[in-house]
Length: 433
Image 1: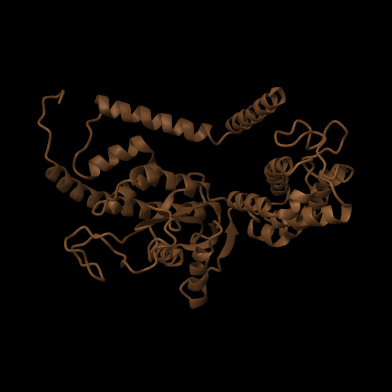
Image 2: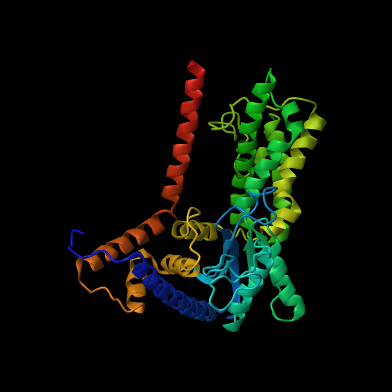
C-alpha cells in the first residue's frame, strides 16, 4: 500500500505460486544432483571410494503419526518429507528429498489412486509411516548418480536400514551398509527407561516416597549425563576401534556403579571423568545431585540394578551401533526448517512439495544466497547492488557467522554454564523456602 501498488487478487497469487513452486522443485532437484557429484569429487580427492557415501536420514510429518490412536482408522499425518543428508563433508548437504502427499488439490477428491492432475502421490488408505519405502526410493535416486550408502545413521526406527539392507541382498547395491544409531536419541530413550524402573526408587535415599521420586528424577538426568561424558572421552581415544572401545567401557561401567555407592577407588584407574579424590569426584559441584549422594540398600542388589541400567547405554551391542559417534542432528535442524515452511496449522495441498524443496535449497546454500538464486531461476532476478541485494548479503553473512559460532566450544560452554546457573538458583530457592 505504501508503494501505491494495487494489491493482487488471491486467485492471481495462487496461480503464480503454483507455477513458481513447480519451477523451484525442479531447480532444487537439479541442485541436489550437482551436490551428489560434488560429494563424489571430494571422495576422489581424499583417496576414498568415490561411490560410497555416509547418510543420516529421518522423516518429518505434518502431524504426529501416533497422536490419533483410537480416534480414526488412519494415521493422522497426511504429508511426509524424508530427507537424506550426507555425512562425508563438513557442510553436510541434503542430497535427496522424498515428499509424499495424501491430500487432493482437485474436486471431487480422487477415490483410490491420484490422477495426473492431482498433486497427491500417496493413496489415502496407505500407511504414511512407512520409512522403509521412502528410504528405498531415496537410495534409488542416489544410485542414479552412482552413490551407494556405506554408513546409515538413523534414530531408533530401523525401517530405513531395512531398505538399505534389502537393496544390498537383492543385488541393487554392491556396498554392504552398516547401521549406526544416533547417540543423542539413545540417551533420550535411556533416560526414559530409567524413569520407568520401579527398582531404582527403592534404593534412592529419602525418608518419604515423594523425596525418593524427586531424587530419582535427578539421578536419571545425572546417570545419562555421566554415561554421555564417559563416552565422549572413549570416542576421542578409540573411535572406530570396536574391541578397545568395548574393553575400556567394561571398566567404566564398574567405576560408575561403585561411584554412586560412594566408593571412588576404581574411578582413579577406570573412569575418564571422575578423578576419584576426596574433593574431586563426579559429584563435586554436580548440578543434579548433592555432593554426599549415595544409593542405599544391599551392595549386591544395588550393584545388579545399577549395572543393568548402565549396560543399556554402555553395553557391547550398543557400542557397536554407535562405533563412529555419528549423529542425526543436521536432520533434526532440517526438520525444524521444514516445519517453518510447512506449519501444522496450514495444509498446502497444491504447493506442499515446492515449499519443502524451497526450504531444503535454503539449508544447502543459506537464506540470502538461496533467495537470490531462486528468484533468478524463476525469471525474476534481484538487481545487483540494490538495497534488497545488500540486505540479503548481510543476512547470508550473519547466517554463516552463527553457523560457525554455534559449532564452537565457547558456545557449548555458555549453554553448560547457563544450565548450571539455573540449577544452582533453584537449589538456593529451595533452601530458603
